Picture 1: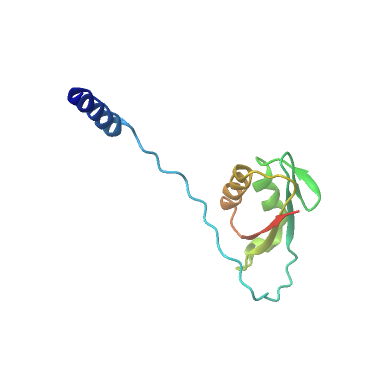
Picture 2: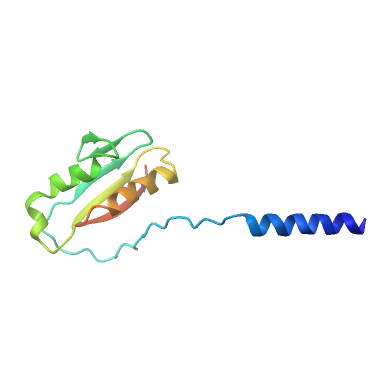
Length: 119
């Protein structure tokens, strides 16, 4: 019985030392401020559904979203202030889908995203 415990311990030690531990990617989230700031910039409205994404009512794919956001920003790109982007979750949006969207938005500068709850 003692030798069986030794073999199990050695196997456990072997698998622990030979396995690789990956570090998961991080998505930065900032808490929304409670005070609203007066801004003459109109916010963009993005609806995230389980199958579709709509930017200001027009359906876009996740791959073309950064280009559409850059087009929408247009002349406002020279300003230092970031444009507000309101993200509304529709239906049963998975956490992975929201994470994919936030990663795509992280690649686009000049936007301040605020995520609303699901409706």
